[in-house]
Image (cartoon, rainbow, N blue to C red):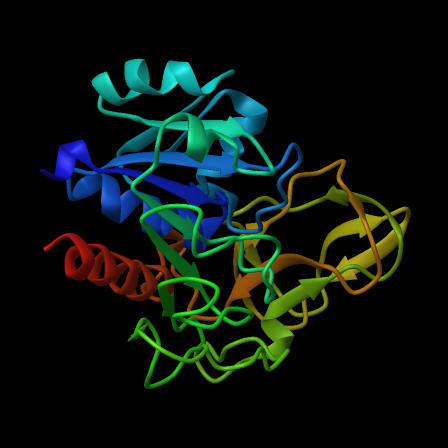
Length: 264
C-alpha cells in the first residue's frame, strides 16, 4: 500500500530533505516542490541543490530535477525522488497527492490549507492542527521535538538557535550587510575563531567559534543584513556535514507517525 501513496513535500532544505529521505526509505512515493532559488545552509544534506545542479544525493538517496509533474513516475520507477520548481505547489494537484507535508519552515503559513490533500501535515509554528492542517510536528529543540500534535500549535519561534555542545547563537554565521555572498572556506573545513570564512561585498564574515563548517549557502547569492548564511559545528566531526541531523530525523519521525496514523 505504501508505494500507492503519493506524498508531496513542500521545501527541499535540510529538515524537509530529512523528511523526504525517511519517507522514501519507508517505500512511499515522494515528490519535492521548491522555489526557483533555494538558500539551504546545510547544502550537503539538502535535496534542493538539485534545482541548481540537476540532481542531489543525500545518504544514498538521489533526487532528480524534473520539468513537469508528468515526469514524476519515470523518476519513481528509477527509485529516486523527483523535485520540481513549483513555489505554489500546483504539482500536488496534478499528481493527486494523498499527503502534503509543508516543510518550508517559514514560521508562518504561506498558503497551505487543510483541504489541499486528504492528509496535510505542517512542520513547526504558524499552523493550528485541526484548522489549518490535520497534524503539526514540533520543531523546537527540547523535550517535545518531533512530537505529533493533533490539536493546537507548535511552540513559537524563539529566534535563538538551538544549543550544540553548549553553544547557541555564536555557531551561526550571519550576513554583515546587504550584498553578494562569496565564500573563502568550504563546507567540511575546520575553522578557527576569528578566521575569515567569506565576505559580503567586501565585508568579512568571521567565525565566532572553533569547529567544522557544517553548512553554508551557495556563493553568488544576494543576501540581506542578518541573514543566516552558515553554521559551525563545535563538535568538530566532519562526517556530520554529510549526514542528516538528529533534529531532522526526529521531525521526520513525527511526519511518518502522522501518515501511518491516518492511513493505518
